[in-house]
Image (cartoon, rainbow, N blue to C red; front, top):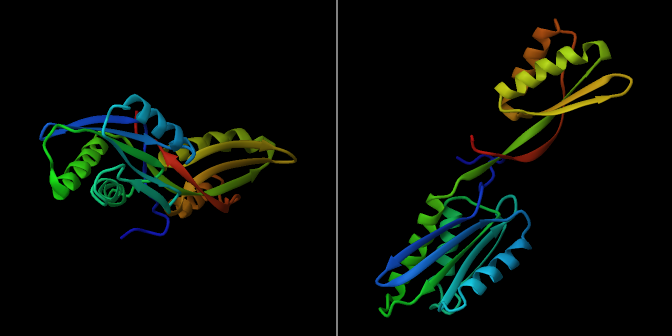
Length: 219
């Protein structure tokens, strides 16, 4: 079951892949999108590079939950290219990416079913090569301490974050020191218990809002 905070993933970097079906070449370009507007230039660049191709079909999904999408058959029979490509992105729960499949016709007609399979396969096999970037909701946690305790707690929270899939966010100094990190929801109780343990119950983290972060794959 998908939780309310389980968001679609995206891809880490562009991928290019070529599939040959009955002498037709299907060249797939999959690009991550930091901004939906970037898709316009990416699509235009691919069309410029493959100006002599018969078709440049596309599928695009954007938004935190993949709420925006569009597709194009670019001259292929309606529903045989863009929609199947988009279905692959939906099935894999991906967002913030654009996929363009360029077709160089090989002289053999594939029929509607053959086109659907070819565009779906070209998209799916290209995405098999992509490195996925998952997205996770983290909760803000702050700890306010006297300046004299800041160094010790800084070291403790940095180490804690590294071992609990949290993100360290630094220290702000004012009348006291405020240490901030972003914590997975299922680690909140653990942080509270560990802070109590290391401070003999003197300190308790305060939890605030949430944000969605990209979790990069291991190097």
